[in-house]
Image 1 (cartoon, rainbow, N blue to C red):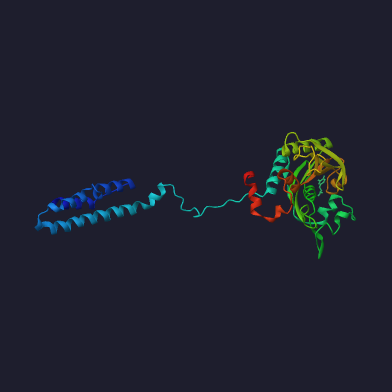
Image 2: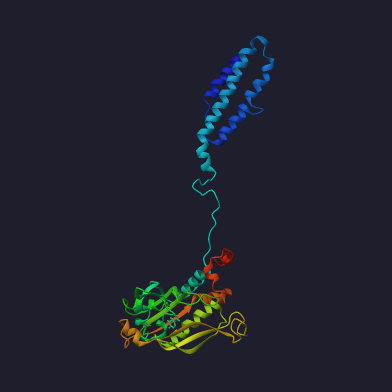
Length: 339
Ligand code: DAH
């Protein structure tokens, strides 16, 4: 028996393993219920009494060596162990809650996408603007009521610096350093000095469009807007243009679409007319081209501007404008699916 134990001690001393499975196999071979060391211990009761002490010490030595050896082999494999079970130790320990895009961003992206497909490229300008880009270059007369303190946020010490009241200022920002053809779509935030209510806010969002080239006509404008309306609100959508006035377009129009909430039959949203206004548009006034360094004899243009909140209301039927800026998570989470 002592010889056998000595042989096993030598064997265990030289144990090797190449994988976690090897180690488990060794544990089973020596230390499990049916393992060879366990069997030796069972045999112990047959050892003659005078040898029991020596044999007992040896068997314990063997068992401890086997345990130690297997544990040290395990430690050696521990790192590669974790690799093999596809563990990302750089991951944050808690589940990361992903945010969702704001409904106005979803609508803005959709508008910009539609016009990108029609060849318009993105242009942006500053929200803090000067009087020239917001009004002067857009052909607003010196005494135009839109310059009134009631509409525009001025900085008292610098009356020339204002918060832009419309994204039409980006038209001028682009025209002053670009010659036609110009085909741009300009989303952005605008500010007006209005009392905040369900229907008005002191800031909101617009998307401006501008196309300047040779031979641009009102027909081109109408067709592009019809395509836009159908992409945005569905194939069956109708549009109608009503004459209007803007200082920077001549002729000017406002565009209505058939109410997509009642399908044109008449409802509270469209005030029972079957139509809702969504944008202003027109042919760029030649004076605007000239004010911005573009030859109005050679080039013509069209422009349009729409409110993003208005389009979002039509799409999502949000009754109170303030919802868009209150950051109430219950409201924002409603748009998770649209992301
Ligand atoms: N800037 C106008 C507004 O804020 C909207 C607008 C109307 C823009 C007609 C245009 C346009 O480009 O042609 O009410």
